[in-house]
Image (cartoon, rainbow, N blue to C red):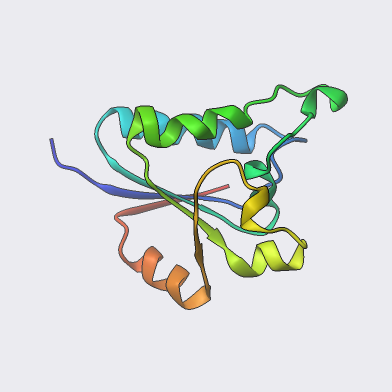
Length: 121
């Protein structure tokens, strides 16, 4: 099987639609089939990684703990967060539920150029 490099870009808030959860599930499926999966969180997508979410209050399922399984069970180690998106929202890495690598726009451009496929939500 030929291994492909896939980058999943999450720009959507985790609750209010099903995009974030479905994208996470797709990343897990591709990783289970031994594809090289990376994830990039930008814009409101950074909220997906926040600790102590309570989406049940607005009638949504809490799937945030699934991000903790990415490295352990799916070998997805490359989780990137746009540092500007965090800064604009007054968030810090310490508030995120998983280890991430902060990236700037130049690094994002390089990351995107090095992928076989990019899937964005």
